[in-house]
Length: 342
Ligand code: SAM
Ligand code: DTB
Ligand code: SF4
Image (cartoon, rainbow, N blue to C red; front, side):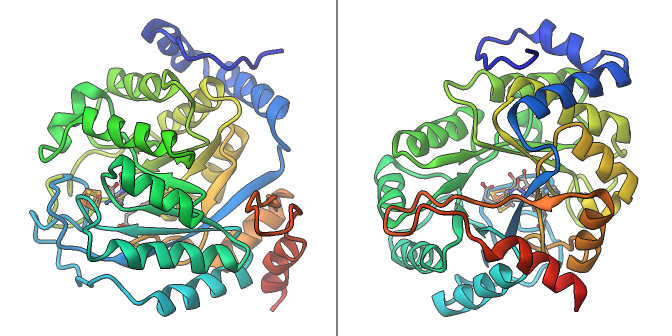
């Protein structure tokens, strides 16, 4: 048994995993993966930006920060019906979770009721729901839980030390406070971060250590590779070595054996072989659909082809929505492959 769930990982233990010979690391990660998951199932989520740009935060990687001139077209909070249309489309194409993101520091009292309606509408389609809206109070977290929200995404992004270099309009502890509010409300947590921000190996290890030593591991851990955005301070940062990216996935898999590790932003810049290596290292979730929030993602058909070439199938969900059947969504996997044959 190579897989133990712990919350007391030391920096040096994680460093020695990260620095293992590549094949030893991958073997270990794949062994842990097989003890906890179907090695050929990958969870499929689709993203939608429900409020775009003009964000008051100054995240140096982001196209949506109002602090940089990224030539992004801004959009106010979109209508609930528009969200429903996109969610129906995502479901038809085989996604099991619909993730909605807003470029806010936190949701306002005016916008919040619309967001609750979006959660109720999307879950009624029989999809899992996820939102990322910035900081949440305990009351907002409880209201989202009551509306039936399954997951909340709130990334810690990088190490505590490097955080200040990347974002100055909020603190690392602010992020942890929202994660605690969400967890206390009974919503599942999605939290990870970005690599390729010019951080060093110590920061990458420190970032994974923070996630692995949370009181509960996030159920979902997105690992994003920076998509460089013109006009942001990180526009010309050096690329991360691709093997270091795979190492991050593998170490995340070992540290958080029962969590879904998501191969998130940056897939468009990766070839099929690189993505296959990430799945082997323990990634078992992707964003699927031609757009992330503001940047592009691989074409749906290319993802289906890749899954089919690798013998991977989309993970079937078991909804724990108490007003719905406690059963897998039977049409989901076939929807994914039906779309391929068209
Ligand atoms: N505004 C909300 C927040 O920050 O929590 C939610 C949306 S924000 C875009 C979600 C996450 O996407 C960020 O925390 C970051 O990890 C990731 N992200 C943003 N811009 C990115 C980029 N250019 N490349 C890779 N990942 C990015
Ligand atoms: C996460 O970790 N990655 C997603 C999601 N959570 C909200 C966002 C990726 C954004 C990539 C850049 C963009 O499209 O703007
Ligand atoms: Fe705003 Fe989120 Fe972008 Fe930061 S990452 S600027 S909080 S949208």
